[in-house]
Image 1 (tube, rainbow, N blue to C red):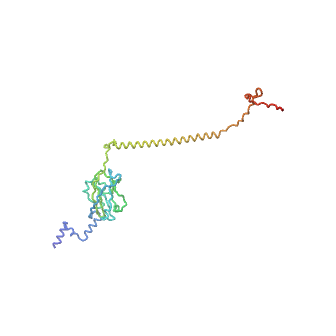
Image 2 (image 1 turned 30 degrees about the vertical axis):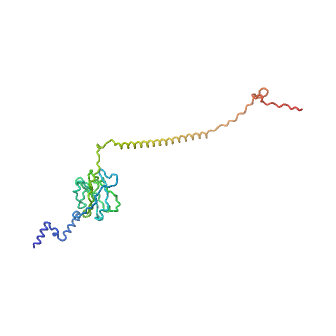
Image 3 (image 1 turned 135 degrees about the vertical axis):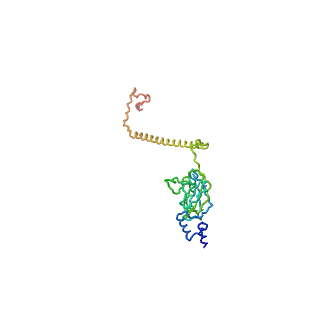
Length: 295
């Protein structure tokens, strides 16, 4: 009779929780936790992968509000199911140690909670996105959604980062019953700082000024050559049109001009001088033949 009382006492204090479960009690608690989605604990696996900024020479890889990560390959295939999702956890470097994985999707920290909590989760993607043969881009851009949080939206989004940081990130694999695996935290990522207008030096550097002068000279020369080419072309067109007009007027004048017929002048009779020879002939004037005398 004493054994049942001992068991009841142990059950009340919780030191014999396994013995105090009546048949079917454990299954009822797990079923209720699955319905709420945040009650079932699933052991997680720590993967050796360390996220990092993409080593590729990309424009805008680090800006004042965004950074570009390398997309991991083939690190979740042995720990995931087709229905699982992979999240990116973004946290301030000094708040990453206090981050706790959410037990379900309903408890995922939002982008709007970053100033207060120091962390948020974003870029929810299917496991197939990170498989070995995924056709998706090889990089992930953090902070690229400028419309994130507009109109009071409460969905996880990828909004611009509010300060230079530094930040640390990790990937978290979550299933229907909570976290299943996660990567290590990245090294601190420091964004670029936007310079204030008063801190900008209006005087260009020596090397930059020489480059600017050379470029300005080249552009001015090209502009002068272009202007001369245009003026030459226009002048040629005008000159050709003027020559064409003159040629047409001369041809018209030649074709329309007609001469009048003037009869040739008759020769005047030569005046006779003394001796019957015309003046000016002298001794070369013709003489009548001498009479023929027969001998």
